[in-house]
Image 1 (tube, one colour):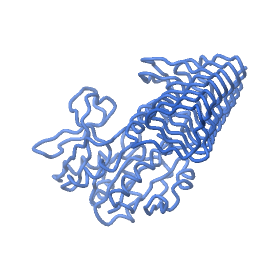
Image 2: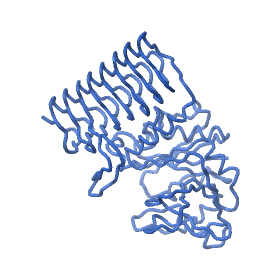
Image 3: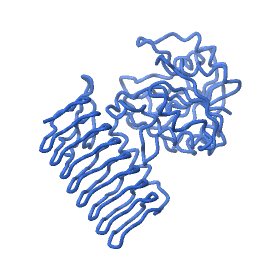
Image 4: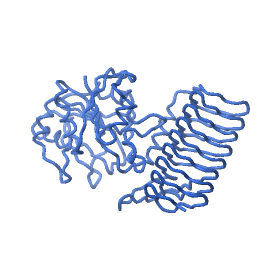
Length: 402
């Protein structure tokens, strides 16, 4: 069986992190989202994978290559114009000759998620669904006599608790339906519209409801929730680095090769620390934190519930909480991220909600000493922030803040 993974989009609501990588390559617990999907498929013996790529495709292709390192075989198809999920599936037409899986590349799943659909699928099309109390912003599924009767995209009122995950078992006949599917008002061709055509034409469309992992990280701050969930499910401690005498490690903590945890440091899991890192001395890393490779965290710094990507230096006496820091950032001493609750964050004129959030810092920034970032404010990419600055508004790309 083959699997088609849709990985061509940018993920605009995860900016500034997606200005330099696609959403599927955002790391959670130090691995790209897409890697979890590929490994979940491999564990179900689905090893023939078609990746539909587009935005920043080179980063995806460089990381995964032909798939051999992940136990799969990967073919790439470029979707040069973002014309919707149905259009993306049709691009794989020449490689499809039997029932196949379709998955979104930006939703976190595990092997059980895939096996649930494989075990329960029937009919011409099978949808994987999850039960959710809050369904705002999602497509929902209505049933009649054990079959799917309607798929409704983002209804204004609550009419069903069955959320469509966007994971499907499809037969090759879907291609014929896609060819007859009209574009939406936004000019996109949706796979849900093609499936609805099959329903209206008398096809047998079923759903399988899973309780296994399915996490949709819509905004960048949602990655923190996903990170916490994955780290909480981590099996145990893997210490490949050096823990100096006087450092204390409590709970589930993974430390990569050639990393050093210096004396007086205190780490409370679940925490994952990558390779070639230098932590401390007297540094505190608190639960639900992921620190990437080649990072230096100086003395008397505290980090909690955060994602710090590769090649980041954070100066002494800093406090980072509920925040995400992109790659290649140099941050001076006494840097502080303010944390806010029930925040309204504006992105391109639209207000988005964050339960609890500090900041997001994109890639390749230089931040001076004694800098405070107000809750919900973001620093984009390529910025220079001088010492003593209080960041009270979003900082655009390649800015210098004095």
